[in-house]
Length: 91
Image (cartoon, rainbow, N blue to C red; front, top):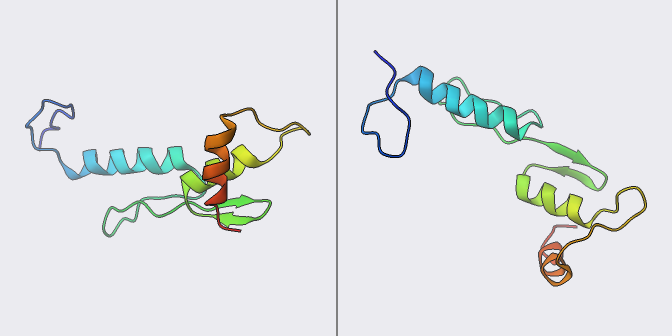
């Protein structure tokens, strides 16, 4: 089967290798050991090993990094928003 166009206005059918390529691209960009399950095509969750334990969620990892000092300095961000988001992090 010929590759279908993958774009917002396309009605082409796409094939398995195209779907796999998309999933593989997502997994590689997530890092943390994320991979494509060859049986069902799902992307397995990454594991990010942080100072306070492992996280399997990109959002939680990002929030943890936002609240963690870097080189002895506190990150600069919208303090009110950051406080609300950090309060929702698991211990």
